[in-house]
Image (tube, rainbow, N blue to C red; front, side, top):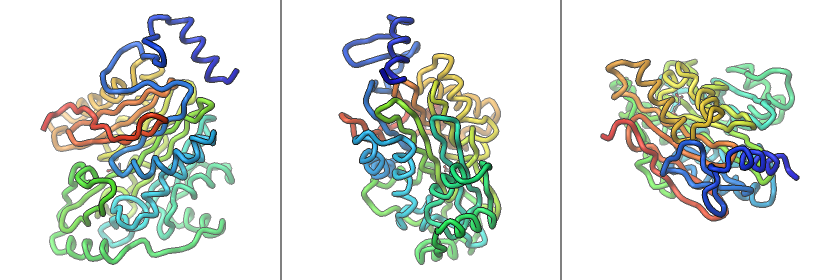
Length: 345
Ligand code: ASP
């Protein structure tokens, strides 16, 4: 019997009231927003562009592959797509015109790796995985991360595409720092993402997967806030903030203003809330409320979206402002969900 089945059997014996119908288990508190999956792989990721990323992850999960391989393969899709202006190749640069990537990955055994402020390498997530697997460390930054990547066979590339260079040069005319909430969400996932023009944008892919053995992994990768100060690192590569995985409780990831997610240690907070019995959606909502408490009078200007999956394969998301979406792939489901939000417009 797999560990997961043992776990499920134990939960069902311990809490018969949580069994709600044929293939469904419910968390102690119920939301309308999640579907329940059991003994089946599931992958979820932030934003509409998660649909294509999920498809790549699903190719691995459906054949019994490991969740870690799935999340790496999944987030590599937007990393390699020059039309996605918030991740990897074609990512919006910092104010000096340098594309600096932040990425991390975490598996079911609390192993994790991270790169921060990495330049010239398209697949930052794969470098993060190598940091995890080939070094005694967790985080490599800047030139050290680049040197490590090159020593391990990664190719140095120019990540600043002509389109993002043009948009950056236009931005320089005003240099106005003005994040635009939910910009990825305004683009159908199969269409070319708009370039930012004089507006600043952001949005990260965070992906969480449970494989057929019930093991969880996650990955998170981004070019960070557009036109940031060179050297700025957000929440996305910070273990516990932009991503956290605990195979006994669940996994969570974040998108939005990274400074706020770091302050609340968002992903870890959500995982601990799920351990206490909160459903994924309710745990995400609690974390959003924490951010509001930390920003009295200012929270209406901030967007943060959280996405979580618990050990049962249930998932849910929540955001501060409306417009945060996430993509879900299971054997029966392949769709985008619009997360509920605290503020309604
Ligand atoms: N969280 C990312 C950062 O702060 C950006 C985003 O997801 O929008 O770097």
